Image (cartoon, rainbow, N blue to C red; front, side, top):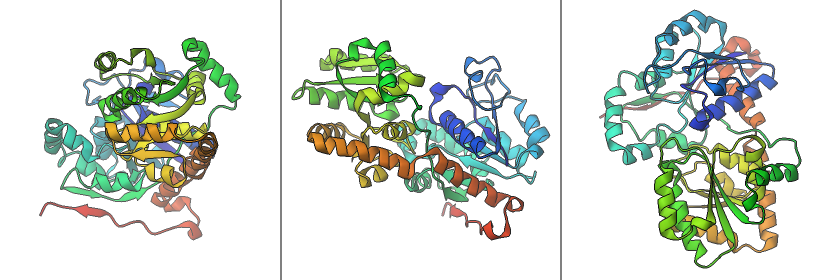
Length: 405
């Protein structure tokens, strides 16, 4: 198959959608399919040179909406070259441009919302939600309604997506999601790469947060819970690793100073490559108390390193984690986060070792890029029956409908 991904930007600081495109694209390529990407990045953007798939950068965008007049004409001119088109994310012009260019083309398009329909955003940002309500009927509703499939990475994500807007119609499907294994390099060498960059952490017992520094990730909950933990356990050190596009770090550092734990918290900024993987191997547990997380690629990466995960029950893969004994889950509150931390520290050495083994088992059972690629390919082939043998063809799913009464 020839597959085209669309998203506003491939900047790695944007998080999940970019990594999804990277991982699924590499997985499909390994299976012999061709994958290309369209973004509205400036063609001179520094992150494009290292991206491992062919990229058509049609920017720079003229606004935060990701608008460029080049996109819709490019799609109309080139869509016939592809068997399937995948839109990554919502509320940006690439999705609307795809709907305009493809709805009568005969080439199916698919949408990964990447958690952007979660009602958490409605509750947390009511003014932004009001603006979206005005935009929804004539744009995003149509993008979802006419998609061959709207793809969710967990049952919880699909269920929650139905709660944000009363006018909602989508041909829904839950697909496997995953990420690549750590590099083939020895874990000791990867750990050394992290310690070389942060030598002061070499002898510390580390808890790791790795992700965007953003209110949705519950960073403030983690810092408050960690401060409470420090009152009765002085052995742990917290690593806060990730980019900050929301400029929240100064306020969080002020909170850390107020809590009296400045010497117990290290801010590394964004980690990549061996240094990132080394951070997983150098830590005792991974912590993510998010208020909303449709999947959590960093959670899967931690599991792939045999690292137990301490997550909130708003991370939509928490059930798999708990069922496999790969970590703990609790409510997205200070109390819930502290309960996770306390349960981990109270494990005896044998139980902690067993949980590390189960973490890797959980990854291999549920979250490999091979499983993701195979399941996504299954869905895409359903949309182009001519690419299947008769014995493989299946009936399509009925759409889920929700309308105002």
